[in-house]
Image (cartoon, rainbow, N blue to C red; front, side):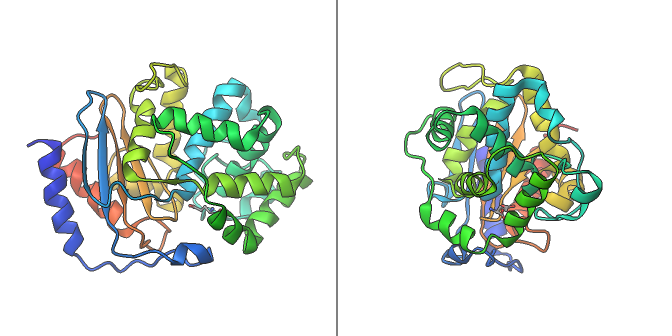
Length: 304
Ligand code: GLU
């Protein structure tokens, strides 16, 4: 059976099930979303692509952007990046402060908020025009010029960003933030506010299925080894404290965001994005996880 047939069948099947999740209401602006939205898009390394449902509609990608900011910082710093943060799953929620005290301000990994705030600090130090340069990196990866930040979402998150403000200041007290916390946080909120469709996200993540090479330009974005490492981090840390369960059920590296998006990558084959806004108790898309579990089961393809 082809991917298209499987995706179409599972889309109809999962669309019908009762969604017991909830939208992420802690960022006020994220509440203004139609919770019935459901879209899927697969982009393959052999150029066969397929989308169903609301796959062309933009949504807030939130923490999915953490993979992209890490990719740019890794490209700039190389392996010295790991002096500033770790590569271990945290087993805690995305915005937890708890381990930072014992870990002396070194975040466990780049995909929890603490780690992504350190990455924002690195980019702020290294890029001449951080906001513009990061956006052009993303546009280049996606092959689309139509990607932008949402100032509405960034402002909304900033207005209630108490935990992230605490995280950034706390890390700074251990000297692992070099810039002014207010500047780091503004950039962090901008990065989280990127809006993309499932189609644009799958196209953007295809380089991680393609040995680090941007398939739209043939540019080597990351070395093959760096690309492998980012996939390994997505596998072990991409779903907060549900990462083990995602590996168990789906068997692919991936990353979720509280906007209800999930991107999963099958190295050598494809990148697939599912968007459904309501989240389960661990903060991951309720229907997104169910779809991907059934998709890898039906296609009999995973990295294991
Ligand atoms: N901007 C969100 C926050 O910092 C990202 C959370 C997420 O998507 O996991 O809370």
